[in-house]
Image 1 (cartoon, rainbow, N blue to C red):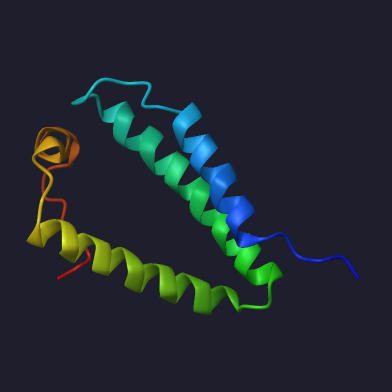
Image 2: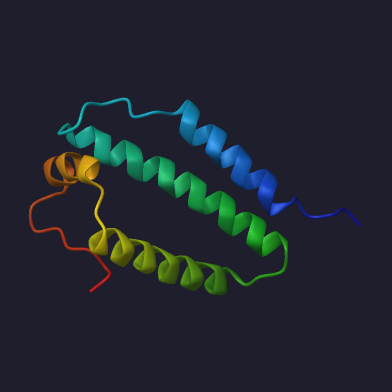
Length: 101
């Protein structure tokens, strides 16, 4: 039986994908947000695939990812990075809310 791929290899592949696929649009361009969402979707799909291959249930993985994202969101709110303010304000759709609350 074939060994499932090592999680570290997928993470490294994902890092290369992120580095190689820098933003294609300027801050404030709504296409930038959609581009980012597509790239994040791709990375999440890769992580879910690896975890499921290693024996986890898809719902377990998605629930864990949701908890992790909420923790990350709260962490950033508690100690924001000043460099993020411009891009967040200029690309967040009006009326958008975050799931951490």
